[in-house]
Length: 263
Image 1 (cartoon, rainbow, N blue to C red):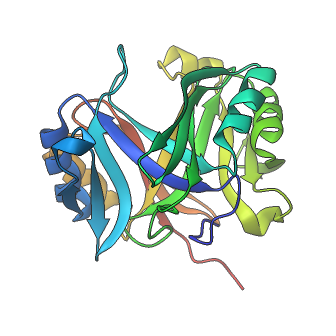
Image 2: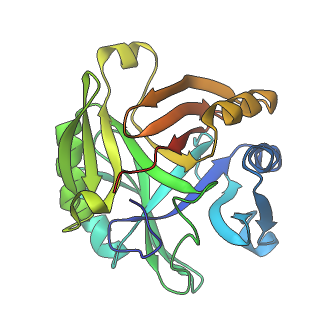
């Protein structure tokens, strides 16, 4: 499970790049009861989503030409420059070369060989999100990839993740964990894009899951706020009830009411 005791390879940040930051902030603050805190003009329109005084995500305008509104997941690294080299050696692309974000940390942006975008954060003053797995915060990360085995090998080479296939209904699901942590250190999973998914327009991407108390209620509220249902709420035994959504500008995300784990 995710934790704020961050280790290398774990998700430690997430931000939204939006074509209309003001309207997007209104959507998410209405949906999750988040507060929005702008960091001012010197931060280029960047700001934090907070819940109960804790930073749970961030937002900002689109920063790259040709970008579409989307959520970006960041994974912890001890050395962003070394990770950039590892990405290239493993067949990925460096979209944003490593750079310092004031004294907060060092970041870089990549595209994996399958076409999904992600980023890394090398923490300095800012270690990462203040809350994960709590209601209203990031709870899981899911990769949609054209080749699950190839994706697992890539991220294993770049972030030292471990991958394990598990049954999920009639499909195969690959659970990802940080190095040496086993299933207790699971951070997300890989879904292979099938022909049916491709026909439906699914492209390679990372999908963040936010924890909620009632997935059906959040889906209904998202529709009222101008969002769109991508996958209607469904239940997965031993996992919980979840749904896939798009905000009014097309950024994809998911919500999940996780089922309590048996001890």
